[in-house]
Length: 131
Image 1 (spheres, helix red, strand yellow):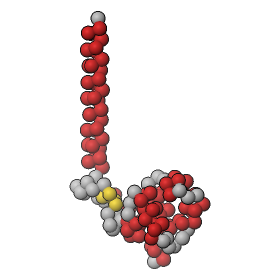
Image 2 (cartoon, helix red, strand yellow; image 1 turned 45 degrees about the vertical axis):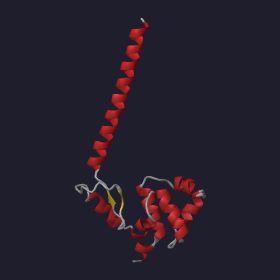
Image 3 (cartoon, helix red, strand yellow; image 1 turned 30 degrees about the horizontal axis):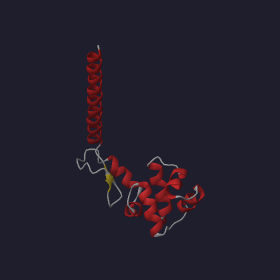
Image 4 (cartoon, one colour; image 1 turned 180 degrees about the vertical axis):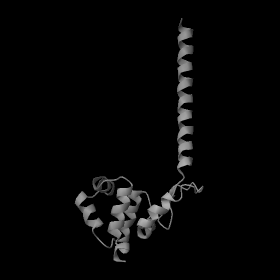
């Protein structure tokens, strides 16, 4: 039970899941890597510090407090969830629909190609007019 209440371990695990190194979190917070290590070893973290850490991790302090390893499994079980929220919920799970994100990326890619094509057509027009 004590492990589930260990805020430092939760911070460490969330940071790791986000692919962030201690050095990167330290830079975001304006502290040393050693200070981040010390925080991650602490069972309790002051609310002010926890809010700053949560912000640097892109989540709420409540998501850190309620985070469990089980929430990661819940994340993978939400692939068929059509919520599309894309954010940490209050119970510590991450609601995210990868199909929605994939469609979003394809649409953005399509817009970029259309812009590139329009630019190339404009260049061709300028070259034809200069002859």
